[in-house]
Image 1 (spheres, helix red, strand yellow):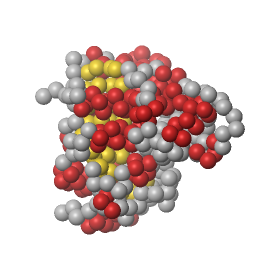
Image 2 (cartoon, helix red, strand yellow):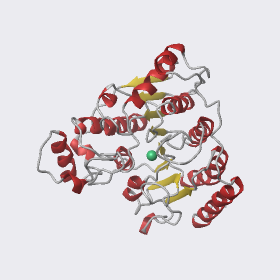
Image 3 (tube, rainbow, N blue to C red):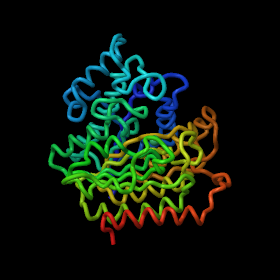
Image 4 (spheres, rainbow, N blue to C red):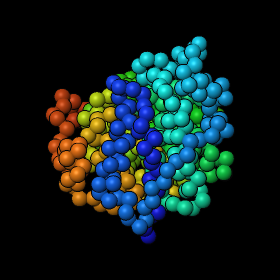
Amino acid sequence: MERQAIFLSSPEVWERGHGMGHPLKPERLQRTFDLLVAYGAFQASNVCVLTPEPASIDELAVFHTMEYIEVVKALSEGERGIPAGRYGFGPGDNPVFASMFETESLKVGSSLKGAKLLVRGECDVAFSYSGGLHHAGPDFASGFCVFNDAAVAIHWLIQKDLRVAYVDIDVHHGDGVQWAFFDTDRVLTISFHQDGRTLFPGTGFVDEIGRGAGVGYCVNIPLPPGTGDEGYLWAFREVVPPLLERFDADIVVSQLGVDTHYKDPLAQLALTTHGQEGLFKILSELAPRWLALGGGGYAMDVVPRAWTIAFGVMSGQTFPDELPSNYRRKYGREWLHDHEKPPFSSVNEHHLRSLIEQIVSIAKELHQIA
Ligand SMILES: [Zn+2]
């Protein structure tokens, strides 16, 4: 049966951003949208593009503190005298920018709209590609994330008495979402990421398994730098399907950061678009009702291709590998998938594989996976 797929987008998500020189360039969203349009992806009869509305203050407050929401609003309006640094803002990762409140609450509204459409049965999968801002805390900004759309959407879903599984494949640990649901058995959080000893935010070790009622409902697979398609996919298949089958979620929320790519300038995993597509396909099979969120990804020529491939998997479309000529003229590149391999690395393949196997075997023991 064909899946009803919704893509959530509005030019407002890419018209403003963190500013020149910041890695989270809004253009990555525009290019992704342009590539999907160029492929005619939105013309399929089972696909619909919808415009999100900003999340309301009450909606933001299911996860964020009122104080923080008011601070973000005031900073966004240019108010002075607020100790911005106390809330995680400042030059560097989380600069204050004009209309920050409007832009960031729209991203939350986008993910929340996806959640609502899924619950109402109006679609089987919704892709809120401007979301996936998994580092933000209840009262602080972190790692380019102002509001945590994933945590807000999951809170909204569990208020509807649904069981939610969250799978995060961004190269960075999904810390904000993990801590939001660390004490509960209502949400299973799984994060695959580059080892926290080598990358921001420095958490997500295999022994972080939840607390109190939440013990066993938090899963972390830290992967060594240099991990490529084969090792990642092997680990993912060992861990994720058995956990999701056992948890039996009503809805799967996934953060689809594509900064795992070997060309990504901020991290050191070595996936190609083939490996990323493999992950999207496994998730697609495991998630009959699927709220897909965006996330990281800082190589401008990778992000639009990877998320186009992702939306193809969600909506059951295969696009020709040659990029549409109007897109190529505007942005360059030839192929949707990678045709070249990651450059030769000095990492010993054998050693890498044995590190991955060790982590997976510890995780399987901790979480009683056969
Ligand atoms: Zn990331």
